[in-house]
Image (cartoon, rainbow, N blue to C red; front, side):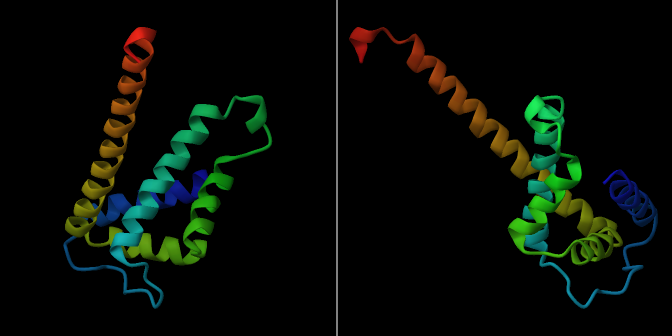
Length: 132
């Protein structure tokens, strides 16, 4: 898994340093941009989940690769198709930057929503029983 992300990081750095024309030819099976954004969001969530619980005894037999493949299974996408699509999108830095801004925006929205829910739950717990 680390090798996959090292490769992705290397390609991203090279792509960001290059011009806006795709360096990589468009793959035959390209994941649509909106689906790619959703997949990247889920991959980041999967990585965060793995990192949060990796020392838990229930996670002892799992690796981050399992989480990565669970996202691919969810979208019914082969790893080679995902990697080719990622490399293609990364080869156009301006578009890739826009895509990743959407990814981070979605993750931020999820975080805010979750934070709001937690605050609502705390308020409910703090209300006296008579008010209910």
